[in-house]
Length: 284
Image (cartoon, rainbow, N blue to C red):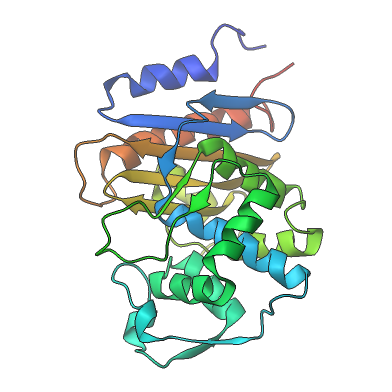
């Protein structure tokens, strides 16, 4: 049995001692144990807000107020720089709502995000967020980088709760949770969560072996923050992990950014604990 005095929180704090920034951590092993370091600290959302927008979309679909097969059109007011592929298609491109929402998540397409915000409406999205119980999360506006104001605000606890409910099949409905999980599993950017994971277990396309570890997540980066969070699957089941960073000095976005490196260290530390304890953060 592990020494209960050697907590994950203490080990994480020791790892982050030389990190020049602020990292908050929220993790849930879905068996009654959580790790909470600054879990209620408010952070700029960056693209993590897109996970909440996806949940709002499925909520409206469930209520018959929206449809995944409706067609949305890329209009001039939707244009924004940054991540995504729709810029290559040009104004006038038409997509099914589900396709635009999928692009919003898997390649963090900013134009697709503005299309979904326009389709649902800002007020509807925030009403859904509140109804879900995410009391400290708000989408302030569509994405436009020429506006010097926060895109949104959230906390690690709220973001972790979203993914916990997806993992449990309890966000909107069991069927909606399953569809959202499938979309989150295709997300391209998870360097912070998996940067120190053994590659063999993450990519089995070449070997044909069973995929023992997978991630369903949504990341987000802006000058003010580096965030990532989601569901991590292991041979012993799933757990939820959220890492949010701010107050760092280097605003340039790259894979070896200190927030990414230290986040990857913390994520690997938690993975090793889950594997050692066969699915839990601590052995009882």
